[in-house]
Image (cartoon, rainbow, N blue to C red):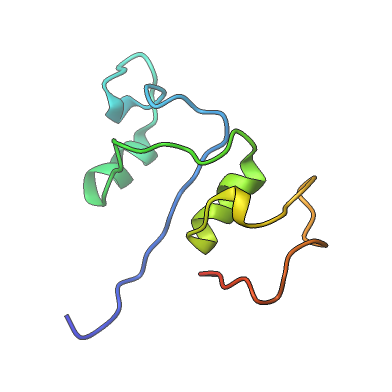
Length: 87
């Protein structure tokens, strides 16, 4: 593969892993997400680095655990320019 792939990471907030039709819960109808899961990739064995969404999302963007950076109240005022990110 000579070209870099396009990656779209879809994250939801406060959603249990069972809360999708494609996760085996037929009572929940999520046809669009089910189709995306069918045609793409699903991560079924994972954990969250922090119960706070801002810190968890910052971990995804930086590859670091939350204790390696200071991020409070969804503010970036404490974000250090030397922190590399994927964004």
